[in-house]
Length: 80
Image (cartoon, rainbow, N blue to C red; front, side):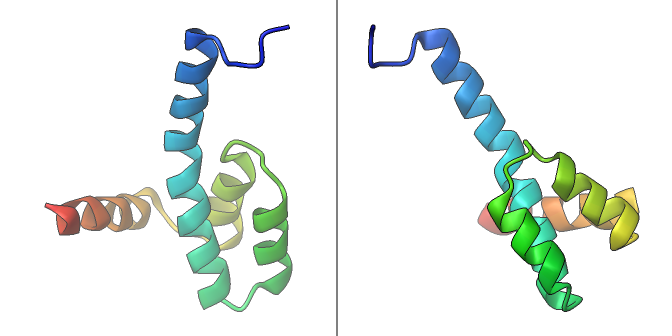
């Protein structure tokens, strides 16, 4: 069995990382800011490809899309 990822698997892995990492970072930041230790631990431990993070952001922390969009775009704009 080949130990290396095929090119399709590598592309999918990169796409999933690009999708997951910003959601995870933002949700961890909100959880720490709101002192939600249980959520923070769950988000750190569980890898749900962004699903748990999105549920936390929109349904527990009750952020709306405008808040999330502003947070993501401010990070991107700061790097330019």
